[in-house]
Length: 493
Image (cartoon, rainbow, N blue to C red):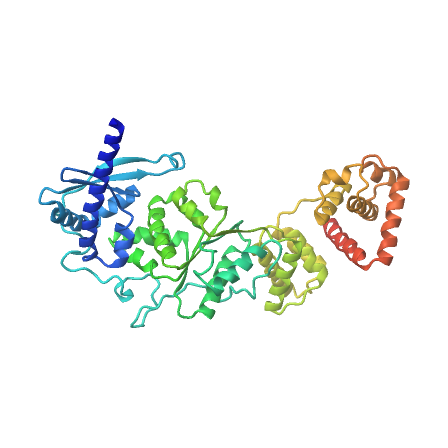
């Protein structure tokens, strides 16, 4: 019974505080524009009313500091209007972190006296019309236009036509096309594209932006790096213009933010982006993000942001495979009007396997050497350029190297290739490996057999003969063997 009385009393306190705050919100609505109201007042919750002191819960320390710096006069006058001349405010700040995710802690902070005038505006007597984009200072306005038109900051060369699709990026590319056709109206919001440096993330997200502009010319699209976003936030903070900064970003229909992992050490930027993210998502606007790692692995990012990154689709891009690298080179050759033999293309694609930027750089280096020395781009020139362009180690082609290449090609674990099994796919891969080992190494038949767990030389001879016979009768089989053989050949150069 006693516990019930306590609960009832607590419920009444919460109910009273919520009723008081609801009256306050009605006053505040009349004195700020709707964007400001959504960003800075809707997230606040009333949690207690003790006498004439109303306690408000706010999401973060930054949120509290922002209210105290920019809306203290408005809040002070409103509280006194609702609670009387002795009305006061206190804040309860949620302290959110990975360790306190399930049981968040909070700290109480007193509200300031409201006598000081706001540095930015007199919100009660002369509210600004923030919903008019022409009243907002934008870092991306196109000069010379009477009405604000946002410069999207997109590279026109980054299009879907120039983005080579492969197994390494197929899901992300398909999702990007879907988003470009219906920005903000799909379940892929936000779309988070993550992967290593130079794997095509920036190209893909800018291709989405360019496609949106083509299909939906009336939508405001903006591409910005996280580094530039952070620097803008710092500059606007110094000039006491953060309202302009936030409200500008809330005008965007498709926001593309590159390298969000840079937010990890920028706590206040995370707070601001959280407010922008919430507004855009609730308004049905599209958010596209890139990161060098999966959102779940962004240590130092606020958990509330990570949870929102999971609302949509997290699509990874992997390092371009051998086939994709060849296609990228051929596309670049076509764009530059170059003609290079397949042998050279495969050699370059095999040796430059880190990222697309290095691949493009290798092609430029080849072209430069060919032009300066007036030489044809052949395999000898490619070998010379590759020695200076990429770090290569003198390597001897071994039976084990060939075994690993065949395993990779047929997607068979190395352990299975070495196991005593008669499964067809394993036996076939083993036979091809023996055939290639005989062709590309100086090892004896006996030595080759020993590398497969002790087979004798007659088994190796039989395997090689079987491969040659099948190549004569099975076209698809022959193409596969020649493709693996080409990779082994490139490794031997």
